Image 1 (cartoon, rainbow, N blue to C red):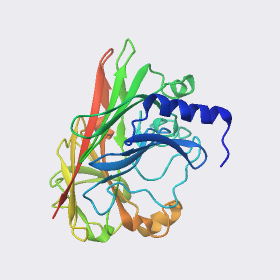
Image 2: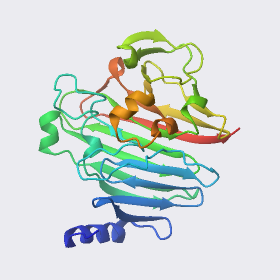
Image 3: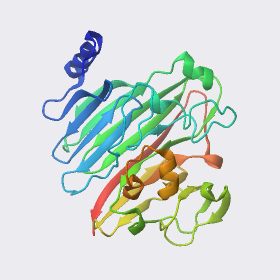
Image 4: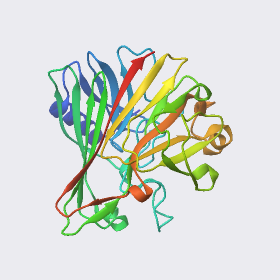
Length: 309
């Protein structure tokens, strides 16, 4: 694909300023979107600067990727990317009053800027991004804020989403790291750690219930578990692994798989793609909306770790 001289100059500038020899380098994919490729002794990963969206993470010791990205994923300016870890901010799901506003907020389709990159003494690689808040964004969400994303790629994956309130008054937001995890077969996996937790069930018309035991998958699941700071685990017997999800500053957990009929309607999951992922999202949603006081900050952070079984 041919790129403009401005685009090539931007790519060269990123590599001049932020590349780390043999560990981190920037490239373009699809219709010119910039991606940071990371490889170190612990793992490999890729992060798209549009949306600040991590696309992949696979520890060196793992035979299969941990983060799922469909083969049908498209990379186009201003368009959301299916898979990976979309950043939902400053609202989760549909906007509460304006149906025309983008689903899951505007952060996931906007260009983020690189603040810094570095190699750590433990062999992991860190990249820090920030989202410039434009007047067009403020037309949808009229607050002064700074949004940063810190990603650490190592034998675990650590992500922190940091919101700073630059206003003279408090504001409220909802948010999520909408993580798509690779699984062997959705019908063979289950999620542990949410037993007894109250949830809102979108697939059942927003009825409410309490979780009883583990979460299996035999039909569409789309649930917002609330008031749950607990960690949880994806158990995948066929791939002989557990994916542990540990979180901080998150009071909601969203569990989602569209199953066959809904997946066909979506159209961008690829053939049978719905069988190959489960979303377990660390979030602050519904009654767990976050109030960020004037001049203060809020951090939602997660750590993913793979354990062989």
